Image (cartoon, rainbow, N blue to C red; front, side):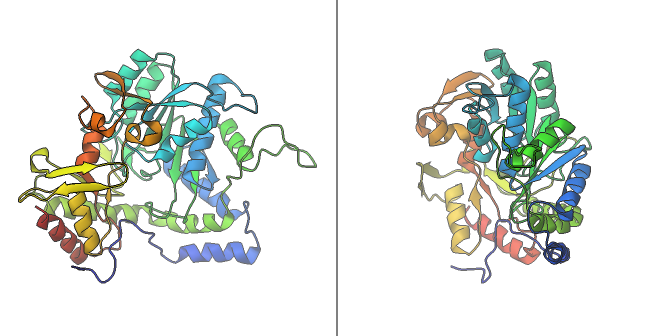
Length: 418
């Protein structure tokens, strides 16, 4: 059944040549470690693009999120003892439908994630559920909010809610670099924010990320923490826990060479999204929603199947089964069919409150709070928007090197499942 000789990928790096120039510069000048002109330029460009004052180049977006959490925790609660994290025992409101890197840093610092449900209109954190969470836990002072697949939620409203309750906002803009709401760049809404240069992102360094802030003290702390928190002394002096988190000058060379092509990549991703919308316009599906006054970066095109056109599907923690039914389909069938044709898709993020390690954590919807014990309970949960989107949704091949002809074949394959 193999349709494509060359695999059609979900998303891969798109290189242009400038990257090699800056990598070579690092090699020839022998600045191969965690200092150098490439790092300086990445920090300058990243801050400028995100409309923030400072950027700190780090080894990954997860490292950036960790230092965001650490900085927020120390600002809120003071510097902890060496044996404790900055959020020890404190609840933190977190996006539910996201990659676990969004909230694992909360756990690194001893915090307790409380998951906020997703809204149907944006597939991002639900502001109504967040307000409900503050009603239940008015003492919470930190919110970690992710932007899904480069399509925005009401991050401006989330920010207003945080300010109303005296809480800090960490914006996980890993997937949303270059996207904007009301003309304001993603990464500029948070008190502290993080962006990603992972291998499949809109631009890449193969790895890497940046912490973004308008606070020079936080930027300086993050640089210090990221280089093992060495003190200003003639010898290796350490007074607090540090990390090996700094970006290398070689990786920074790749990122530096990618930045001029950010807008070009966004345009290519938008063309892919628009072709899917046109190709599926008569099918019972919905593509990623676009809220008013938002400009997505269209990183990954995703879709959900209308409930009345879902065949029976069941998933446990590692497998999925479905019963084929004429005129109906499900994410499992579509993904298996794409894979058989040599094309890559993937399920939409499984919500965090459904993950084995977080199932006993609190999960707050528009209607209140609860804990989930099994996936069966989740699937029947009242107001559990994230679980419903996960059940009916999938990410489509979105590689910006995919040709229009190849995408037409992907569209045909998806249509055949109905």
